[in-house]
Length: 240
Image (tube, rainbow, N blue to C red):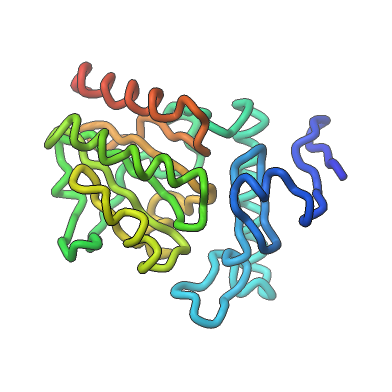
């Protein structure tokens, strides 16, 4: 079943047992919301499961505020789709970032090595922030590649891999062989909201040396690494 928004087909409902998009992204529960091949909401967003570390961002779903938050987020992502074309791998300049943080937010977090990192520690650096999940197959290649980006540029670039809706043990297993070049931390609900209530995974945001959002990428298309590398190299070259 397809639906139209402003005269354009923007979403369809699939048989969950026969969904190529769900298979590609490793989703085996519902409800799951996709726009193009980008996963923008998972079951954990709507529920507060027993053992879930943080409540879903749309809970309590029975209350109007949770449903309003979902509608606002979905509308934002649909509008990005309609205004800018395919979401997957799409790069937006800061004027198109909508509610995504246009400035690196003030934050204090502890990485998986137990080291504390603050926004002040990142002054003068290009900062690459990747929101990912251990259950997200497209995230795997990006997480394996990001440390190479960090090692290439050393102290000029900091790469932050922030895991959302994931078990810490699984996250540790996935990054165990990453070596240096990337800081990995668990992203609480407060952290994701500080970056503009990040919806899709993977989402990668590049901030310039002044902490301004330069570009954001949704999904993991084949040329993602090349495009992110070019964005980072351009900022370092221009010194802006």
